[in-house]
Length: 151
Image (cartoon, rainbow, N blue to C red; front, side):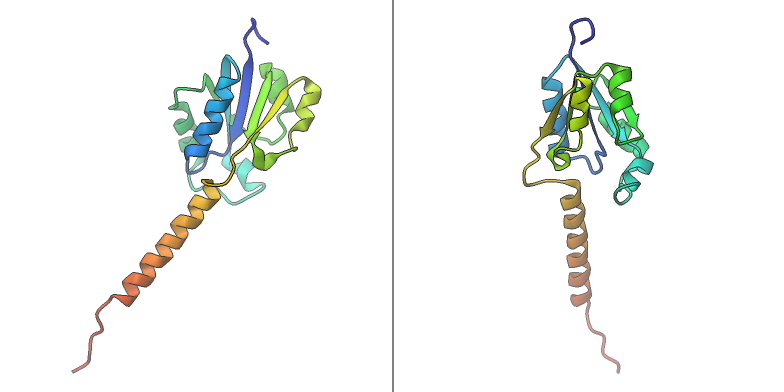
């Protein structure tokens, strides 16, 4: 705690920002007095999955535009030990798709919360939906073109 204030840190890619991202950030906000949000850099994300659709700077600005974070910072690594130490983090929130991966922070005195995304919206689901919709539209357009007959 810093001056009797609880500092909460949450982080993510926040690509194709959606409702579950907002829910997790708001949940993190509810756990403390100061909310710091880390946004994963493109380089970090590409170390474990495909490049984000939205560039890092734009994702950072989207999170900064929210009313809930007190501070938004770049996240360069999946190891949050240094961030926790430097910023005196009391609690860490991450989606439950990372369940168990950040339990090591408990050894540093940090409460770790795995936010239940549950079923529904995810960036991966959104990307698939957009892709499938595009494929469907293309197929429909190709099938609906008039057939020209040679004279």
